[in-house]
Image (cartoon, rainbow, N blue to C red):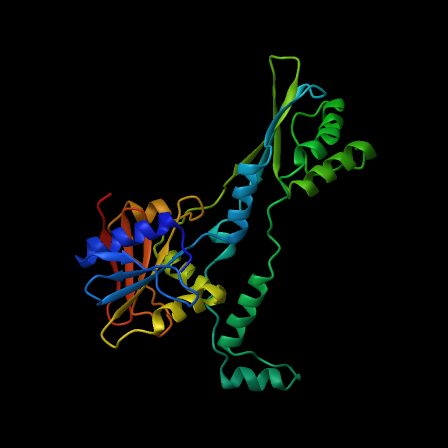
Length: 311
């Protein structure tokens, strides 16, 4: 439980259209419980939105904090384009590690080296991924802290932020550049002329993700999410486990165009069907990936299917 209303409504629409039966919401309780249940009792579903928590926190800060201001001390209007870290950063495909052969192990053992198994390599990759430091900058108070450094840039005739300092660059200008890079998490900073006497500052979220158009990216993304999001996956399993043997258990992962680079490629094509399999928990009979008016379903027996939905 605990899914947002928009995701619950979209998941309910999906199940009712594809399965042809009515679903009802299950009330919140102190115990883990599913989000949706069919009125005939044959299906239950748990819903999760695949949006990284750092992105949600950043979006909330951008909505609540001051992000634009006229600044009389500035002669230009400065735009700070802050990169948002989306699914491709937090849930990248797990590399295709290989299982070492006996000959490999013996060869490295001669030099006192240990060759890790494929599973150990995957586990180490996921541990490293969980420790990644890709964080959005602090939005609260950013405009105030940027002003003196942008004044320095203007004094030296600069209209955009340069990321490098040549030996001939003055210490004052180099320090200003360094501080802007630090406090904005290496954002792109540009400016424009203004017609009025006062310049200003605008903080803008920017996305620069690369769309591959390859459906298997989605299956890989989901597998990384399943492997990395242990708390949410455990909640899915606990919510679905107490059912009768004849109840079909669904896990619905709701994707967003804000954070998923492949969203529109999947949403707009009948042929965007992954071929790679998934290692899903035993408590899940069918896993769904929802992309607005298109959904992908996966189960162990039949693999992947694509479903077109009415708005």
